[in-house]
Amino acid sequence: MNASDRLTRPFRRVSPSIETVRGGLWTTTVDAATYIDGGERYQAAILEQYRLYVEMTDRLAARRGLTNTFLLTVNTATLTAAGAVLPQVWTQSPWLLVIPCLVLVGQCAAWFWIIRSYRQLSSAKFRVIGALEERLPASPYWRAEWGALGSGRDRALYWPVTTLEQWVPALFAALYLAVFVVVVVHAAG
Image (cartoon, rainbow, N blue to C red; front, side, top):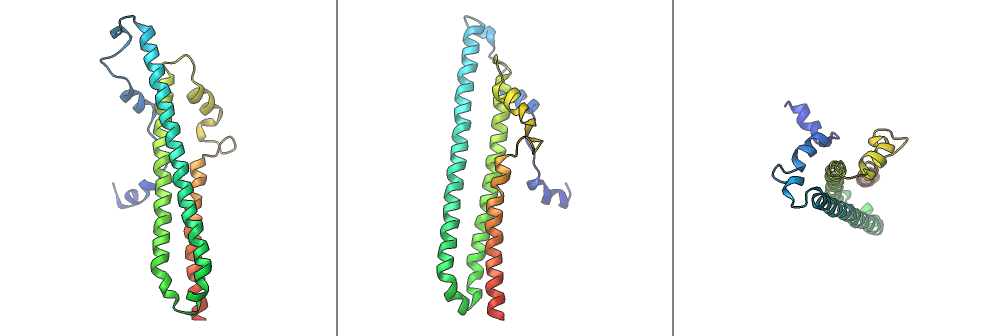
């Protein structure tokens, strides 16, 4: 892997293939024949695992929402505090803002990567749900809903929320940098 690939790889949108998920999902030692009554209890076990997995996926989405709410609150409070403190720093040395600005931009970068990690984890979880649905009578998520949304490829049908979520920390970081530049330019002028 060359240096360019090492730098761009973390920013690529890569998801596990459904084939990879299928290959790791089903155990080779347990199938319908290993159950006393055959297929009925086996299907019930698959359905129960499906229910549990969908619930876990829903909890992940809730955690992502809480994380975003927390970080949005922190950044909003920071901007409010900056509005109160900035007039005093404006007249003193603007270089006092270098460290706080770097910390805030770093925090926004971490927020960006947290959202990206949640997106990757959710993507893998939804592929597992799709593979589980292959053994169920209906495929409401994988074939019906995801298919109706063009599998996320057509922005006219569906714009992935995590793509939009990642703009928020980027905008906060840009705002912090812009405020810092304005304060430095104002102090120099």
